[in-house]
Image 1 (spheres, rainbow, N blue to C red):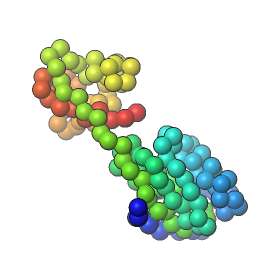
Image 2: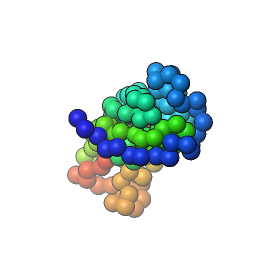
Image 3: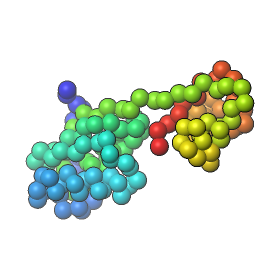
Image 4: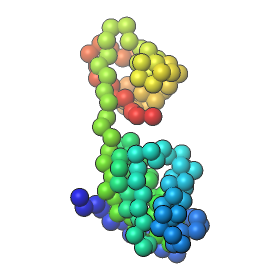
Length: 142
């Protein structure tokens, strides 16, 4: 599988001590991603010289792009090869009696996560209370 190769300014970026040991560099890059709030359980980081190779699964296209930027904007990284896949999107068909809170409780175990579903379905949804039976909603992975 071939990936996109994105070039970066090797002499600019976060100083995390990149370039000493490829295994330690990979670990430090994952730590840098986590420091920025990303879950890296399904993302693999490999270092080949001054190139970083990302494989595994990102939760969304937006997360995929941001992971590439975090990895590439590290001092010593010349390029990032993107071989990641995007996790499949879950959907939910609204049933009579459903609310975004009820769906959030079912999907995430927490009714207060309903804004995540609301934001993921804008501009189709104009208000959290305006859903109807038969409507298909995108349920992002947390």
